[in-house]
Image 1 (cartoon, rainbow, N blue to C red):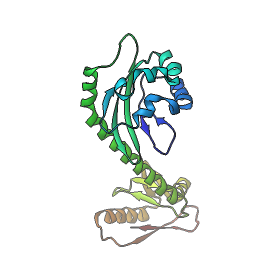
Image 2 (cartoon, rainbow, N blue to C red; image 1 turned 30 degrees about the horizontal axis):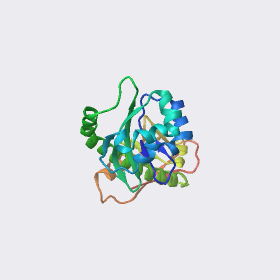
Image 3 (cartoon, rainbow, N blue to C red; image 1 turned 135 degrees about the vertical axis):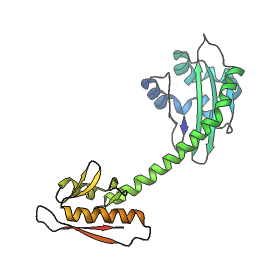
Image 4 (spheres, rainbow, N blue to C red; image 1 turned 90 degrees about the vertical axis):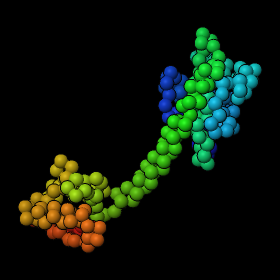
Length: 228
């Protein structure tokens, strides 16, 4: 589970054993009053323990969330750990089991303790990837509002990114197109000049801006490709 301290409740990263209906019910009705959840965000990083080490059984069993949500689903005993605590949130892992299996103990705690360093690395990577995704979304949203077509390509002309205007121009297939993921120019002589310029730009970090004119079969005004 991940918890944003500025948000409401928890978000499940990976869930096993709970139905989607149970998850939705928990988040909508019980997350804010779940004693296990409330106590868990106060525990220090790397804490691993069973339910009564976080709060007493008497308190838990008297709570509304336990009586109405956990107990009817035979989730009577808990084991959990605080994977990571940062300014932007908490990463938690928890497991529950019922009367037949009985309370968790030292063997289960030992298993979770061994997993904690790996879970911490996963949580750090999750946070880093989330940050990069937000940055990329902001960047691409800005580029998609740009009126000029923009393509990011490798030395072979394979398109790694195209903004909205670039995709629209390529979809017209009017002198410029994307064929099998590669940027393609229609007329052979201009195509050869374009491919040569792309290779030179990829091989030389001191490459200066170069313009390649691309005629259009529609006889409309040629495209001017600026390579950098």
